[in-house]
Image 1 (spheres, rainbow, N blue to C red):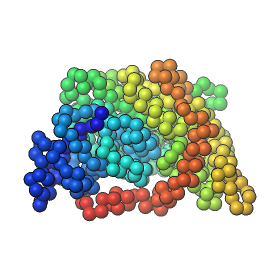
Image 2: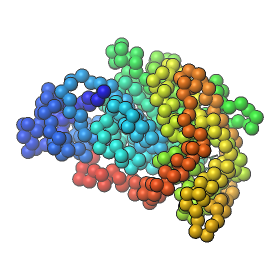
Image 3: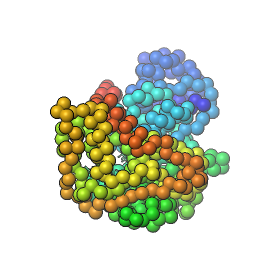
Length: 426
Ligand code: NAD
Ligand code: DAU
């Protein structure tokens, strides 16, 4: 199935002085567009009100005389770590187009999406989930069958230093997004309404901290968030639940454990340890290093989300985890051992010698663990990677992609839009 994107609406507003009539097809003849015309129009922002101000087309328009729309999805936060992996997997594994709305905060990186920059099925839009007019416009234009909300402020340490952005995006932003989606959904016809889904991506941190003997979190655990980040995510989960209960919005919520894998921003534990080790810097372990996290390879998270989207029961929450509980110090030592194997130091010493213990995170949760049996029982999902296989792939990925890392470290990744769209004015 190849997607039909709203070509006529786009074309109407992108005609350029000097184009011939043949180059400027009417609403009824999208198939008359030539490839050179399309190329000329690519990398140019639309000029169409609020939607256009922030929309950058990063794909080649599909040319189909078919006037029927086929389905598409809208993803938010798709330039971040998990959303980026999800969009890449989606584009390589499905014919269904994806609209990707991302504000491009420090965590958003379009270089992650470089391999699909010319993909016809990917439409990138820079914007805020809290911008109701923009979101309403995107929904009306593209008429997605589902919205998957990855957009969030996601780093616990940043939430401790400055909670404001977390309240704004994770709570107010989710509220505004829900309202935009509710407005769109309530005007769909009965069939579309019935099949529509709003999938909210959340975290295991909403359940609080476990002792070493507590059973793993199930979907019925009480919410006991402890950090500004987890409290803001908990609030967003409650809003999503309420929009289902009160308005009937067809929602699904997933609560996942710690992800790791390609394109992980190198201020989080695993990528930070890899890049610091290679740079000869110290490897800072908080407190005694015995905090336990349940690690899931990011591609497994993406496959779980696709499962929930396909077959999850409306209004339900699903816990997603890797059955990989490990103390932080063990994670760091494993990274060092792999680097010793893949990129041994010239002096023969281990990277583990760079480990140092530093002041603990404020309010640091001791242990998270996910009981993912509901995902397996109801949806037949299980992670494909063990920690042993996933962490090898991850360390290898960072060794193979020094440019992606260097551009994050230098800040150059933030110039990507400007470089890619030189000459275009927003
Ligand atoms: P990330 O920080 O890497 O990416 C977040 C993305 O959202 C970025 O591209 C950013 O630009 C975008 N964004 C931020 N504010 C926005 C706004 N107001 N409007 C539009 N876009 C905005 O985060 P991640 O690690 O990819 O996490 C994605 C989601 O998964 C988050 O909701 C997070 O809470 C959840 N989660 C993450 C993990 C994990 O281990 N990373 C685990 C469980 C759940
Ligand atoms: O549990 C899911 C959560 O996992 C997600 O909801 C968050 O969005 C995601 O950022 C992640 O949160 P954490 O705080 O667990 O991830 P982080 O990589 O920051 O830290 C992992 C553990 O490692 C945590 O116990 C703190 C510790 N740590 C972290 C850093 C950056 C260190 O010991 N040293 C460090 O330098």
